[in-house]
Image (tube, rainbow, N blue to C red; front, side):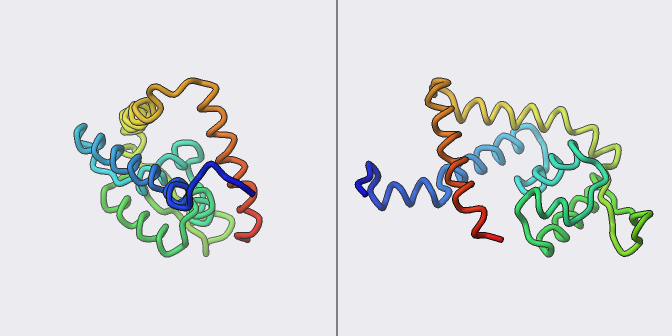
Length: 149
């Protein structure tokens, strides 16, 4: 099969080069706005802003992180008083993760910074091209996701 991509530029696209530069830009934007979060921390908060009180396993599944990584992230977010662990009333072996008032208050500011970074990232890309990129990456994900289970 002939491809318009060379191995070098295809590897750059699929290896996450764009993902990496986006994360650096996001971190820089957080710092400029005095938001002391890492990209990994904000992804945890992002899940909780949509589904407060979920389990550590849910956080791991929705952020594609392993359990030890989630535990460290939650520990750090607890130290910053952004989240708290509470025992599950139905199964006391499980902890549910809840936002604290401080974790709830920062949502609008953080989302504003994330949205601005996204707008910067797609500047100059017309809607049709963006749709094609989105569909292409979704197809790559759909092709690979079943073999990761």
